[in-house]
Image 1 (tube, rainbow, N blue to C red):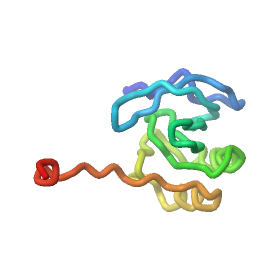
Image 2 (cartoon, helix red, strand yellow):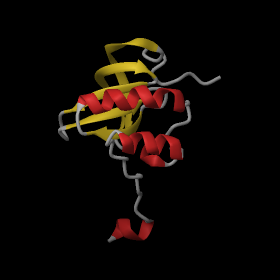
Image 3 (cartoon, helix red, strand yellow):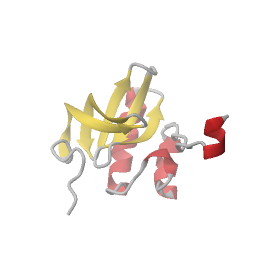
Image 4 (cartoon, helix red, strand yellow):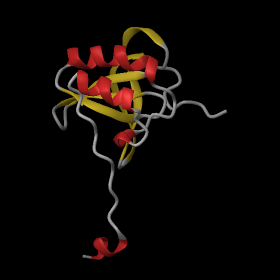
Length: 121
């Protein structure tokens, strides 16, 4: 059985500040944020935003307008998430999308890779 990316951080019943790993287009990166159950909330200082991450995969779930909205969304999301949730909205169910939109969480854009012809241009 495959081990979750952030196995030591997952399953916390209290909001705890811990380091965890996220997956980016440049690879895996260590960040620090608030973790609760299967979600992480962190400040992305580079892009000046509040981000919600899926701890088992390190994938971006969405971008929150503020920490309070992120916390409310995570509380509603946790029972709906499983280890297969992925970034970019590819595997997000309609119920997860509804929770994100209700809490004003922006859905991430899917990562689009250029076609071989576009790379040469």
